[in-house]
Image 1 (spheres, rainbow, N blue to C red):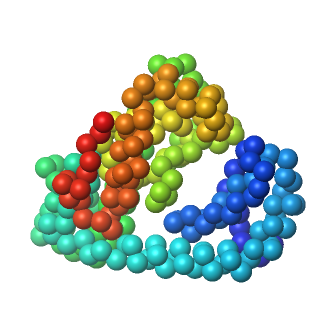
Image 2 (cartoon, one colour; image 1 turned 180 degrees about the vertical axis):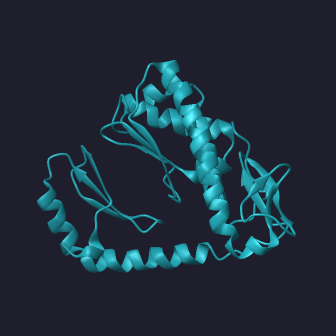
Length: 238
């Protein structure tokens, strides 16, 4: 198979057909029936090579366009569901500081997006580790590890071996939403699909999960450095 056609993720379920999905991050996801072999999957991907490559290129261009927002002084940025202005200091180390807002030295503004992403990643690791440990203990669940990713629309995942992954963009969301995603992925330790049994498990762990899930569907696209953080855009939870 061409190096350009790496399959980043295979999701097996009781479905009868194969679906090829190119994610906004430029990853190829294959949704396949349980019994379909890897050789059969590779053959289907090879047959659809032109379509996949075209959509990978489209995703790459869209991603590049989405990160062109200039992060200047006063730009509003999300952190834990609240909007903060980017403050600029005249001197200091090239790193993000947080007090009543997010701040950077003026000399670091050209690298603002990268520095903010790195800061969010560290914050997400601290927050998500704490919340995952809290709920895992509460529900008597064991997970293998926690990884923080840069996914743009995939909030979290749970591997077959119970390794958990979360995007750093969750650090932009309210804590109620972070908790929903943590519980969602912990529930996958018990149910590896999105069956009725899975959602029943989520409801037992978090009875009001539906309102939090609805909030994320309505507002998730706003939790991005490429979009100005305007609190009037957010719908309330519940």
